[in-house]
Image (cartoon, rainbow, N blue to C red; front, side, top):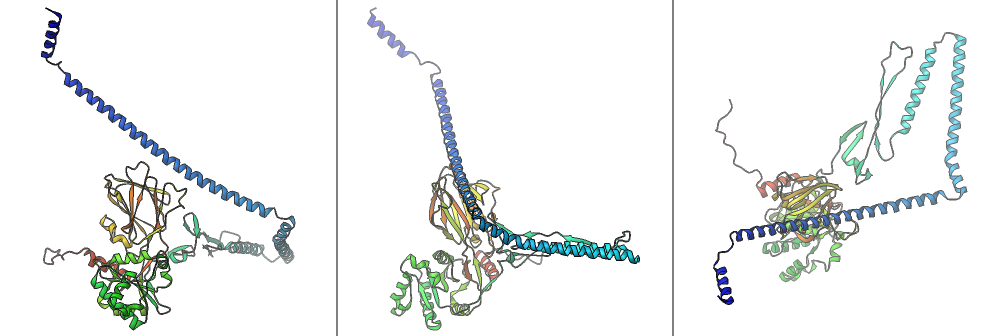
Length: 553
């Protein structure tokens, strides 16, 4: 057999042989091993990224703390320099100041020594005369000495008295029962502990509001009239200028606006401001509305509160929100007419606008002070929390959500630098009490009277069944931070608009704004609030239980 024929025969035999048994099983095991290695590498990469993010967060916190320490050290050095410069004045000035301080003290000391000397001489004379007479009991002298000592202690207590900026309380009680077993008959003195109460807010003592809340008399703490009491507005002079804001794209609102403008001008002789869009619509209807005024740019809008005495809104709650957003500071009283859907903040009906406005312009009227939130965005690149974007005022709520991302939001929440919780869910709502019947209510929050000052802390679909809503006091500052290990950025919206992205390291600061929104009441704030939840939400509406069922005998 030739070599070439042997080679071809061997190849054919090899090709005809069956594959090695178990080849596929080995390949499957190898692919699973590769998959396991890939998972381990992926976990290692994720752990590395998480560690880097945590390290960056700690570095940022270290830099912030270092900056604060440097600022405090500079402040301390400035104070030391001021004290040193004051102390190193000329010796003559120091001597004069010391003489001015010490001279009255020396005079008082000499007078006191002279009086003490006279008292001692008088006591010695009385004792000598008593020994000479022999008929006077020494207990009378001891009693007089004890009474004098008690009187001196009482005078010292009065001199300590109440501090300058606080309200102290003390009361002296006398027990007049005599001790029959004692040789000395003296009055027992019982004193109630003195104290001082002061308000503490953000690390500072402030007493400017204590008389509005509590009173301190004779050691007893009692609550006084609260700031949430029903407020009445009485005009000291007649209103001269009115701003009318309307809901756009509504024919009925446009007709009502024209009637109201004409009546206010002809019957009440009031100057009227409207939006540029509304002025164009009025002039299109009739050229007789040329007396209606408007503004040209945003700079004039900022000065509206100095010109306008009253704001009238024709629409729903959205129109009230729009009116409040126009005023970045103080807000004139708002009279909201209901031309919308629900109307939690619009108690007045347009059919009787003449009677309503006539009563309001005469006064007095009950108003509801609706608190607003002051929101500031602090970017991660900012050196400190003072470097913020332009603040935004909201009347209803600020919402932090996940936007279009499919991942859960990851938010760290702080209240006055105290850690609250880490939010994992669809988002978080920070609401005012006026906004408690809006988005916060749909997310499971409570309905709160609008006169109650507070911040509602309501999660949106949290990934924990124990995450319940909170109501925080009005004086706190809430800080929401997007951590560096968050899978996606968050989005913040303010009263449903002005949407802003919050990247990793960014923070949102929310506190109570100093400028509330005063809205006129049809009856009073409580009556209007209860009527709105009854009519708007049909709150607790059910059929009455039948009276002909089983009864207790």
